[in-house]
Length: 187
Image (tube, rainbow, N blue to C red; front, side, top):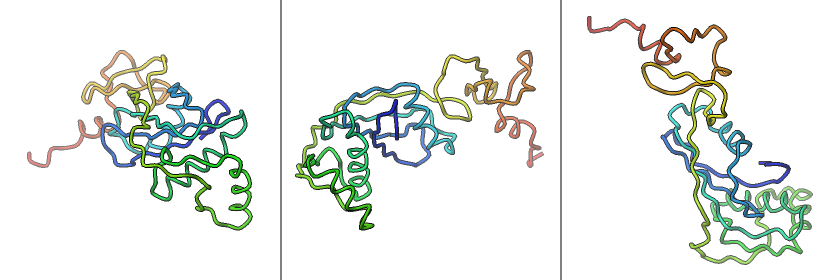
């Protein structure tokens, strides 16, 4: 995932629940949660209407030593995650990373771990940050005009709604509108 021309690795639990933990592996260890990162991450989880918060957990991983190695580090961390391991436990041999990447592409060994030393280091999680998400798009309040559903009290961006929304009448989201107008089977 690219964030301002910088590549990072994210991993998240896809279970539909109010808070989804997003593990962030950033070789610059910037720990920045900005609108661009939230938009990109929330786009992966738009299918889950019950999400209220994205909790970003930043893990301290091997630092890149120059301004152009973030892509190699992001791929190395993604491969570690795909192998069921923790990237923060791996200290990569930086001088071998690019050659290893070329090798796995050329030989088709796409899940071959990058050369590293492995440490069981549980204290490397650096910080957590949460962002409240709204609307059908499951993104944050970006400052644009919003309206609240009169039934479920969820907030929706006007830009995500049908143009015919009347601000002067009670607003019901699509889900609540259907529930409101469905006949009661017990009558």
